[in-house]
Amino acid sequence: MRQPPFCSEGGETQFANGRPPRSCGAARPQKLDARRTTYDERLYAANCGLRTATCDLRGRQAQKGGRNAMHCGTDIVQISRMVDMAARHGRSLGRFFTAQERAYCQRDDGAWRPESLAGIFAAKEALFKALGTGFRQGKWTDVEVCHDSLGAPYYQLYGYYAQAVQMKTGQPPSLSIAHDGDYAIAFTVLG
Image 1 (cartoon, rainbow, N blue to C red):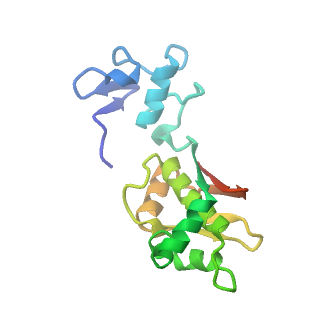
Image 2 (cartoon, rainbow, N blue to C red):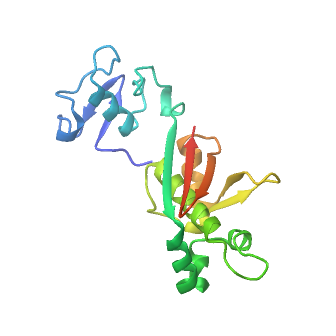
């Protein structure tokens, strides 16, 4: 894993040039103690993924490696955009959706269920946001949204995203999808 231009050793934040970036809110490298740090300093430490005993946003001691942190992602998609996408690019939906997802979203008469397409698309975007990376590597089809026997959605991850989730939390992500009117929303929790 690539180190950021700063790291934390023994609870002391150290930066590449000896000073924190302007956006971090910390005046000088210092020990991260929940009783003596500002919200900005704790936020910066949490976002940097410091690997020693640092404080999370609630001021509690974070576990080494940051494995106890909770990461959330949410996304909302306009269903009418999926109607347009399916009409214009029906054959290229394979770029975004796996064969199983396309089968789930297709009616018996061959028409698409755009609310399901939008929900699955939102679920993938929510996972990318929960990882904190956005869609930068891998393939859209590395993230597959499946449904159990009761219809509850869950992720089946492959390739880059399977490794990324394992490194981030070591637990499978939780997923919730809903749609109403012209919008579908998905919420993902890692950790």
